[in-house]
Amino acid sequence: MMIPLLVVIFVSAYAAIALEHPLGINKSASALLGAGLLWTVYSLATSDHVLVGEQLNESLVATARIVFFLMAAMTIVEVVDAHNGFEVITSRIRTTKLSTLMWLVGFVTFFLSAILDNLTTTIVMISLMKKLLARHDDRLFFAGMIVIAANAGGAWTPIGDVTTTMLWIGGQITSLAIMKGVFLASVVNLLVPLVVVSWMLKGRAVVPPPLAADSGRLQTTPYERNVMFFLGLGILICVPIFKTVTHLPPFMGILFGLGILWLVGELLHRHKGDEDKGHLTLAHALMRIDMSSIVFFIGILLAVATLEHTRILAALAQWLDQSIGRLDLIVTIIGLASAVVDNVPLVAASMGMYSLAQYPSDSFLWEMMAYAAGTGGSILIIGSAAGVAAMGLEKIHFFWYVKRISGLALLGYFSGLAVYMIQYKLLH
Image 1 (spheres, rainbow, N blue to C red):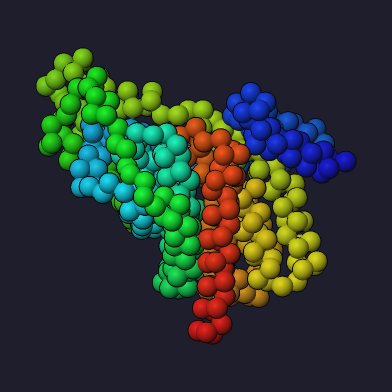
Image 2 (cartoon, rainbow, N blue to C red; image 1 turned 45 degrees about the vertical axis):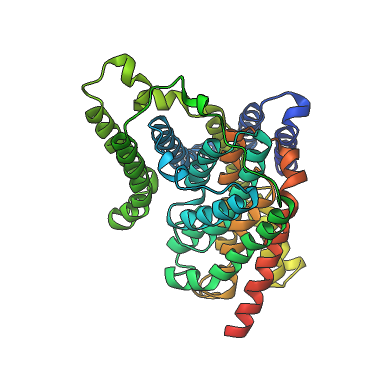
């Protein structure tokens, strides 16, 4: 009785999130309500309350790691933005055509995501678009393409996407092999939507924001802009290095970096009065980050965790194995499912289902899994951390994304899959 009830609650919560605007109920409320109900039903239906408590603590730790990382990344971006740091990039972008700008933004996002991660890159690039585009409709379209580009870029490196990192840490893939194996498929995943979009935007001009937009804000010196921009970007780039050297989780590295940025900011503005430096401080940046999106993220992750602990996801994976049998079809379906359900527990369930003895490191299953789970989340706005961040930053409606971006993401997803399978057969 418990399992069907949990499924009904999760599906209802998901529907409420998807229908946020027609219902007039904030998606964060639906996510928290869903998580609370799921854990309550699970606890009441289970006699071993100690086990449930341990599982909740385990899920909370996993959720906190991601949420702390998200908060720190958003704060760093806000500080750079407060110092007009993105002018370092925007001053060098001189194109007047929307289609040219789309290609430029797509490839910058793709490679930046591979170096940093898809979530941080999405936050940075969407913040950058606010400096380049005046029309909200244009920014929404660019935000959707940034999600596709960030997820495609994150899939082919061990540090670019959380699911690829999981497979890397678990020994299912190695750094060089995943980069060689999935790079071409990831590029195609981005290229196909870009070609379609550039044709759609042909002949349209870039409408920049009016210069008066920043008139109410005290300007910073070129030295201050450069210091905070390059320090902020350097901190984000150094997080994977910190993780490799110290073996500590990424959230610790980015919080450490946030402390450094805070200290440098205090020293940089120590001779200014409170009124002059108020909007430049880390404390002010913390007030500007979108806490509603962070609360939504907490609710979604805790809700999905119950499906993992009750082995609903594992049962689904086993059913797929028995019903379909073909690995390529199973992984394709898992990738599509990651657009609906968070890809982390899906990949975790798959890692538990198939052993390394049966499928050794860098085998077809694991490489294709890294691509499918990483890029499949682009198909729906709530299918990836990058999408959730974009949803909060630009207030993207769920159905707007389905209507305008999902088809492009789906086209890129299947194109990349086809390229990966052809490449694998030719090289193996």
